[in-house]
Amino acid sequence: MFIIGSDAGTSSLKVIIFNETGTIISEVRKEYPLMRPNPGWVEQKAEWWWEAFCYCCKEAIEKAKIDPKDIIGVGITHQRQTFVSINKDMKVIRSAILWNDTRCSEQVEWARRNVGEKNVYSHTGFPPGTMTIYKTMWIRDNEPEIYEATYKFLLVQDYLIYKLANEIVATSSSISFAGCLDINNISSYATFLFDALNLSIDKWPSQLLTGGKIAGVITKEASNLTGILQGTPVVTTGGDQPCGSLGVGAIEPGMLAVNGGTSCTAETFIERPILSPNMNYFIEVAPLGGFLPEAAIYSGVSALMKWYKDNFGFAEIEESKSKNKNIWEVIYSKAYDAPVGNIGLVLIPYYNGASAPYWDLRARGVIAGLLENHGRPHIIRAIIESQAYETRKMAELISADTMVALKEIRMYGGSMVSDIWNQTFSDCLNMKVVTNETAEATSLGAAICAAVGVGLYKDDKEAVRNMVRIKKEYDPYENNYDLYTKYYEEVYKSFYDKIQTNMHASSVISNYP
Picture (cartoon, rainbow, N blue to C red):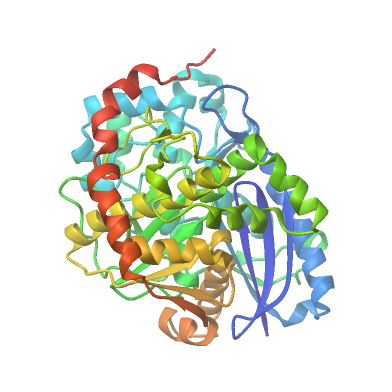
């Protein structure tokens, strides 16, 4: 028996075929570009997701050399918040607006002033921010003809489920991060918010399911395009980070699931929704039950390492070519040439705004403490350490408000293959870091949802026992922890508080041209 777990990410879509023990049988990835028509805007063509999915499915099945009739289910996770407008003919009528698009700052400020941050948070688990619902406000205010012509706003998973099964379905886990789920009744949208923002709830999918439910089955047309057998169940999952938490087995209180990817997220599991009095985290629905307090660094390690590579990494690029090495292996290895603590060089990773506790779309990145003897290795280490410092701040806030002691980090995402990345987190947060056999935790989480949805396993705990396996553990070094604590407490922790006003004065807020 085989299960397809797919992740429609920010820069690529991957399809992975797993067996019932979570072992990867085959994997195919297809990249697609980002469009940045204006500062702060990030868009894609929804058709790219479908084309990539069809290509990857056919290639993965062929590569695995399996009979499609042995595929028992399909689960798709996705880049959260990203959405597309479709009309009544089910045609896409504008480019999709991505999760890291910040064009809706005026709408967010309006909601804060007129509806109230804590009021919104108490209903949805999210204060006003870059969530999908505020971007639909932007469309209403700036592209009224598109808003009026929109029959449904679909998240990436919703769009792909429609293309596969001809069903319009949304999932509670994904809608929670869209900013418009009733966090106290996860089978319902937050109707209060739609009314307060003067938005039509009818423009969203009326069918709202939890994860692990069969949304529909593969149609004949989709079968011809993907190679998946007609009638194969398509199962609901959740967004990429909740599926990632599931895929590393972080389904018990006390575990912190950290994703070292385009964004760097930190999530922990709780049985019931515990809202933060100071909105120090947002809270979303776990795909197969429970809730996930989460905070995020919008510009995660993958995004900042790409920024480094594209702007400063000429020597590393040449080295990777001459030695036939992976470029990221070369770049990460250079951090060893800089000492722990980085001789005081500190980076604030707010290149794309700040999440909790600031919720500040006008925040920007900062590099401070430069000396003449700092070089490229120190910039690389600063990127890694910045993610660890910021995650420590987020973890402290989450732990204090949930009253759950965090003891272990379950690491996933592309960076989990880096020893220096994992050890830095262990040292900075003074926790054991655990990595699993597969770095593809998001796709594995989607496959786990599918396995439960089709009845292969009875629940998330049984599925995790059978499909998730630990590969390596990292324990903190006391001396490194002491040094990181000194920099964290005396420099990093309050740094942005002291410069926030100046940062706002220098920030660029994009306006509709």
